[in-house]
Length: 345
Ligand SMILES: *Cc1c(COP(=O)(O)O)cnc(C)c1O
Image 1: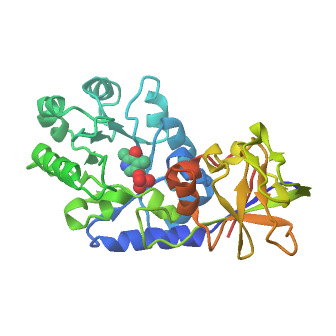
Image 2: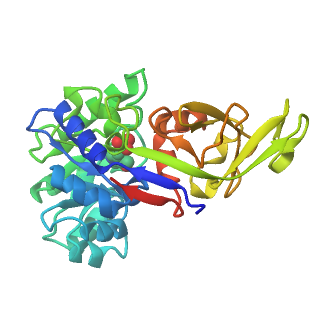
């Protein structure tokens, strides 16, 4: 079998949720952001487990994701849709009992006309300039919005994981200014903001990557292991090139293992010539380009080449892989393709 095995530890995800939840006092709700199929790990498995652990509010990016999520959680669970109220969303929002997090005056006006009694949230832009109602528009509509009792008024931090907190504090101040005197529940922080302490908790926190053991949550437990089968072992002589464009030239006679996953599976090309695979506890360098279905690994250091090489596990975690590829854990997770055999424990 050439299928790789991705083991997903649901108990570890639940433990991470509990650890994140304990960062804030009991009066602060801890939600769970499960957009993009629960960061690639399978919403059908992750969502019910988290609901059982205590999560009551979930966030997805699209109404269609909300529809899928609704199949896996109870009717009581709140499902917030971060893209708000897009044209064509009416029937899904209504039928699946989703809560659009409205981001523009246009969305707001269309929403109150279409679904006057339906629950909603508002996202305001406090400086990230990505998604959220511009402050001047929010202030114009503020009274009307508040009178309709939103489930949540939220914003999102753009620089929470940076050492320099200037921008983050500015966003915090803007959020306070815009929401002063409002009784509706407030939310500002994803995983990154939660690390900054009580000023950033408000009424509800929205961790995503932290649930899966990713930075900037330092006290998470690892969730994943990834084992990729070795298809072929061969000798490569000094001076020979390996893989596309001969991106690696053997500096000495080498034993090479070719394993059965590539960028189509989420081993992004940034890992080319720049990453490690583990044979039990022995690190073996990835050499040459990562191709669509295959990666080549220098296993010269091994006595015996095992059936599988481990790309994520106890020694090399999600963030190690992310660092090697000059990216973040979020991208490594959501790049995971359809071909791995996912084993849930
Ligand atoms: C993705 C997202 C989150 C979760 O972010 P993490 O960094 O994964 O914790 C929270 N809020 C919003 C608005 C998001 O888009």
